[in-house]
Image 1 (cartoon, rainbow, N blue to C red):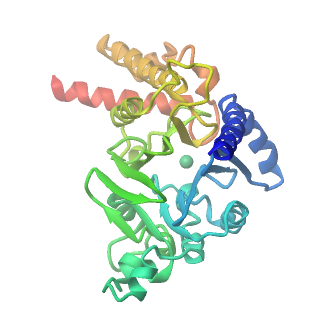
Image 2: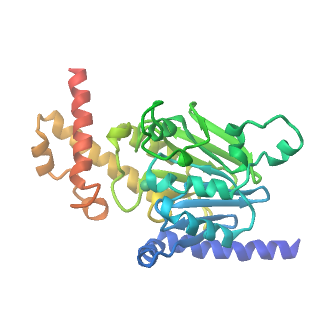
Image 3: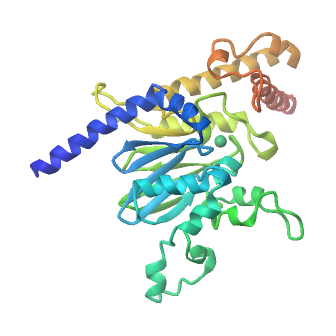
Length: 344
Ligand SMILES: [Zn+2]
């Protein structure tokens, strides 16, 4: 009993170091330095949780007696490196890949990593449980689970070229608001967040580990990407951040401990509830400022000139690249203007 307690203290101490590293953002700096020479960054955040960074979107690795559960799979080009990183953590087979959206840097490793894995139902198949459906077992590989909208966006009507190769498609989808399962001694809830970053976003809540993979609902390096062409909306994004607030617990009353809910974002360093609060407030305040300017009858050019991201631009903004501050402001402006038009 005593030695078990000592061990758990030792691993708790390790975790404190890892969490401190991640929360201060040093891990993400290290990531960009290491990405330059193609190395992945693997950080342990709980005794049975690791984050792999540098392969595209962040990948959460949860391990336990039944094997490995991955949240997201990185880019296709990094799949071999991700597999090697998982193998450094455990020799146990990958059982599930859970996708938080249809983004190429989150689903790119689906095919290779699922093939390297093993269906969770192998034992049931061998026992003749009548579960020989390839859709359920993914031909013996790991299952790839996502919201139905992810499959819809990745595939194409019969006869047309699909935007994403078949090998990367989810093998199992759900159309309800959540999909729940119990694996590795852990209740896992995959919860759909409609019309946020895209229309297929899910968060993955590991209830015992108290870790939430948020996908690109949180990107600590910039304002969240609202992908309007694939069903994203600012209102859905804010709703999703508020839902995450509801699920997340502060390290109170013992503020000096590392105990708290950990949020692994799609990109950047691990958040806790205080970080989430700041991010949620920043986005809500920018949205409210733009709503106010629209109600004064201001044009998009006038709204931009009024600098509605003041105070947050240096932290989350960008003047170049795929997702600029201007693009973020435009998405909010157009969404709110359209609503205003409807209500008048
Ligand atoms: Zn992403």
